[in-house]
Image 1: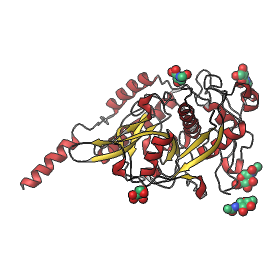
Image 2 (image 1 turned 30 degrees about the horizontal axis):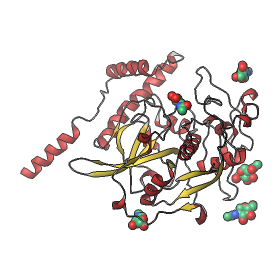
Image 3 (image 1 turned 135 degrees about the vertical axis):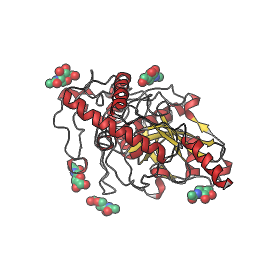
Image 4 (image 1 turned 180 degrees about the horizontal axis):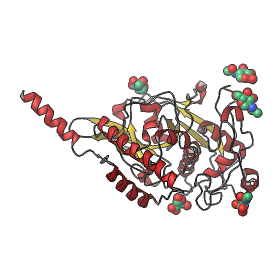
Length: 380
Ligand SMILES: *[C@@H]1O[C@H](CO)[C@@H](O)[C@H](O)[C@H]1NC(C)=O
Ligand SMILES: *[C@@H]1O[C@H](CO)[C@@H](O)[C@H](O)[C@H]1NC(C)=O
Ligand SMILES: *[C@@H]1O[C@H](CO)[C@@H](O)[C@H](O)[C@H]1NC(C)=O
Ligand SMILES: *[C@@H]1O[C@H](CO)[C@@H](O)[C@H](O)[C@H]1NC(C)=O
Ligand SMILES: *[C@@H]1O[C@H](CO)[C@@H](O)[C@H](O)[C@H]1NC(C)=O
């Protein structure tokens, strides 16, 4: 009986303090008003207002449910995606789910056989001035280009070069590489998704990258000033990517905008590598190499707020989001120690933990260990 009581007490302590939003109509209207002000969101019509309110209210209930189901271990909130239904989020922001490819054995960098207990307690490139500020991909599926370009930014810094924001837009507009050698469905599809391992091959072929400031990001601005109607890249494959955007402005095409004379001098991608899926090996190589491109099933990441992401469901083999792992560590509380990866996302600085999230390390959570890649840059 006493045992039962203390168990109840413990459960009680876990349950109070969890974010829980009121679900009645009046409160949700108030929450939504406040949210619209915070995120500067205005809808076009009364009909849209009604639609969005419905979605917002569903999301309030869903987030309450998520918080309860995760028992405070991962926290979820009404964030910038609060007016997108999980289905809209999937189709707009995430990429179509795909199996990660495996590569020929010579592609892989292995660990040295280091044991997990020999790793430092924590490690973080982002606190060492080796990671550029968090960006925002906006309302399109360009995460793969951010992940690729941010890995290259890290490799550039590792060569002793100054921190430089490199052009994601160039990769989105110009890269139409398809994976012919593997004869599968993978291809780079602009705003409809792509793969870092293919994008390195684009940058190799193109001969370099312009800077972000020079070839700035405009495809995900969702109609805000400066939005561009980009054209499909040369090589865009309908069968693999689906139909391209119905309208594009030719003055916004790669062919018109790209300027190889403005490529960052000396920056050349000469090869790319994958890292062994063993998470001890990944940690070791993260320290050796720099921030690494990774991919995962990000279905439940939409409303992530903070904590170590350890979702009650996600796939280890169907990936839909690419990001950048920059560090690792351990979160300790009275009851447990949770090893995690620290990951830079491309959903703006207001999302998650200042634009980053942490995800459980060591058990292949959401496939985070299955598509770890890096560019290899020419040494000066
Ligand atoms: C990862 O590699 C280390 C070192 O070789 C080994 O001890 C460990 O068992 C491996 N982990 C898994 C999950 O295979
Ligand atoms: C990179 O871009 C960010 C804005 O996204 C800016 O604040 C920062 O100063 C830029 N860094 C460099 C080195 O140009
Ligand atoms: C892929 O296709 C090429 C040319 O069509 C062929 O030569 C090659 O053997 C195929 N590879 C695999 C793994 O099926
Ligand atoms: C596009 O992809 C399909 C399916 O993988 C392939 O059969 C076709 O050859 C590709 N087209 C081009 C132009 O590469
Ligand atoms: C095409 O893009 C250019 C450059 O941004 C812009 O000046 C022009 O108005 C656009 N044309 C149309 C029809 O949208």
